[in-house]
Length: 311
Image (cartoon, rainbow, N blue to C red; front, top):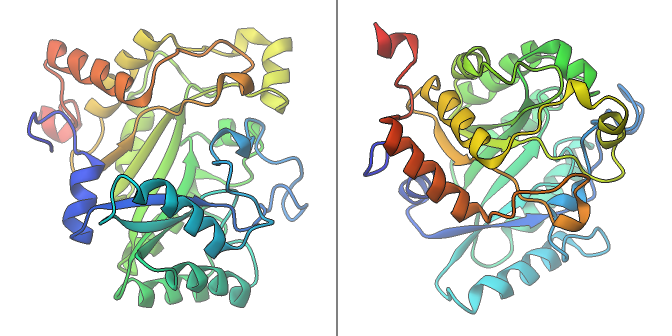
């Protein structure tokens, strides 16, 4: 927990683990996904448009090292002593032949001041050989595997063309933690088909996973996606939160969340030019300030309403 005992913050946890002040630098290493290339499906997740979170330098025409060097230039002017984590973010960053995948990771680790990797992937794309390699690597570098969980409801996962089940998430997370690798997850709150009035069930399902870190985002509808088109034709199956609604929903969610899980983010703010509906106009730090103020007003804190906390 942080000094206010509201929730367990990512920044202090990361500094404690790594022992240094570090910054993630996003990379687009040219991976794809099994629900894009026809392996298990086509079209990708119905909400997905990677432009929403990739910086301008994240293009596959540049090497992994070139992207990292450009990212470093941005931060080094203000923080010359900063160290870096190479964040393999776009698409599924374990979905390629073993030797090709490892070569990209090792290219990143050869860049000066890069002290570890954060690797975004899917629960159904973690082969044993690669997991063993990352387990060995984690003895020398900081390694965080970040799984796209998105939702604990298999019907919702099927509806959004995710292509994996929550049972596969359980299996992948358990295997990763057993290998001694820091393990994160990502969920989207407000997906069509979820119960937007009751966050308890999913929060407790996520708490059952041995995760170290969790990223929480609200649903955003992005222009040109299948989901944006679905909203245009069937808005009745969606509930798009106002900022105040979402703040209270997130508080309800994390009060049912295991208190040792580190919370990295609560929102994603895509560029307004990409949004199919009006955004909130809040920066991430502004949202967090409002969230913390509301938690204090409610006397809320992470894990307060978990069954073990209530008993």
